[in-house]
Amino acid sequence: LWGRALNTGKAFYTNFPEDGDSQFPCELIGQRKAPIKSFLSSPLVGEEELLGHIAVADSTEPYIHRDLEAVERLAALFVMTIRHFRSQAELKAYRLDLEKRVEERTAELESLNRRYRAFLDAMPDLMFQLDIDGNFIDYKGSGEELLIPEDQVVGFNLSDAPIPGHVLDLIMEKIRQTVETGATQTFEYQLQKPSGLRYYEARMVKCGPGDVVCWVRSITERKKHEERLAFTQYSVDHM
Image 1 (cartoon, one colour):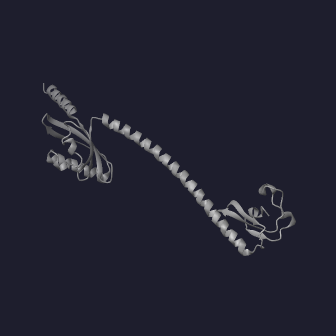
Image 2 (image 1 turned 135 degrees about the vertical axis):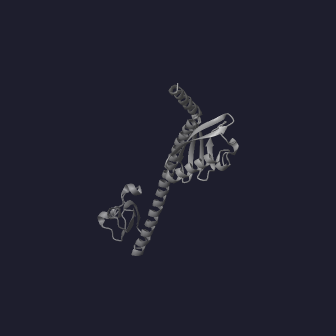
Image 3 (image 1 turned 45 degrees about the vertical axis):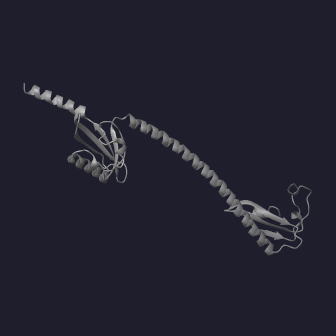
């Protein structure tokens, strides 16, 4: 009797147990084997997994089908409770694992960000992030090459910068091309500074739906060197 519900997976009851079934295992009741007069049992089955069973015996009244249905409902509640606690345990384990992964990933990103920032800080180039309308979103750089006061760069519009109109038109066109095509744009321009004529090389890449990052490098010394070489070559050719 004790194992029938477990073996068959079905609830049952009997008011006339057979002689061979009319004993409880003594280790389960902590005393000598005791004869039983009636028995009712329902398995605890969850998602095709046998979780255990509920068993009652020796009712003062004979068991009837209504008693079986009541125990089956109780078994269903037990299964739901077991599932709930299992789900809670699984969710907790999943949450802890997810938190651990997030912490590890955050540490990796922070380390990567520090290396990236160190790399950028080591670069002498100016770097700007602009939207398609020419508004400055972010920047890196300082000194004479920065045409706008550092505390005014973010939110500043390129059209208000002290640059010639043809240079403004060139930069805005390159921003538009970068955003629309996604292709890297490289171009040169020159500006008149108090220290003299300065030459620049700019490289733009798309970094968002409507944003670009622009690296600006002074190539003044290279241009002067090229001019000196050209003048020397011209002099040699016309001697």
